[in-house]
Length: 325
Ligand SMILES: [Zn+2]
Image (cartoon, rainbow, N blue to C red; front, side, top):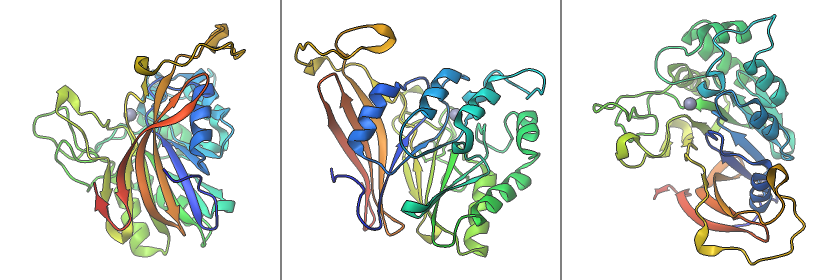
């Protein structure tokens, strides 16, 4: 694939879809430095309130933005002022890089990332309403849409805006294989977030904010009960491209076909184990933008071992002009 997103107007974004405990800072850092993104986006569901893992994501030495998903408040039902809970610890770890209802600017690449509703579980009902109310003062979908809208209007005029949410918006189809389609019931259904759809359509109708890309996860690529694969991109009004990054599981440990050469590497393995790093294959979705418009989107698998980091597979999802492959 093409090399780094360097050069005037050229920007590469790497999406790390729903992690579900499949993240290792050392190996994922190697893979990401190989891919050379200007910005890394995390769609949430790191574990089930896996504070250590979220801390390790915050240690990644690349520009990044993240949002918490429903699994990141899996146990904590209500934020308590007295008791330090794990939702709070995750939010503190991420700091300003948690973009829920916020606009985070990246001036050198003329991009702003605007976050959707944290903790989303999809559908018409707000998940963990007390938590959302206590942290963000948001009590219903209309307020939530307004908060996303307001955050996006804070982006500098010359910036393109990428919306980052845990779950995608309604309005992108109701078949089970659609980008936010309900796959666990026979009849399917649209399981998108209505507040996100509202915010996007209001922004497009009322403001000049340019939204080339909306990134989310939550609805996994593999459909329930072996029903096949989900469509991971969709096209909306105003040249907005919707991207679901939830390739789950995102790490494939079965790399036995290509074992690394036996070496005397001095690298210390994880958790104090010394020796070879067992090669793993790690999924990312890469978005290349040029002058604020999406040029190409690929699902890539990068093999990371002791001695080598290499591209194992690239599945092109979109290439300008619009060819949905
Ligand atoms: Zn989720």
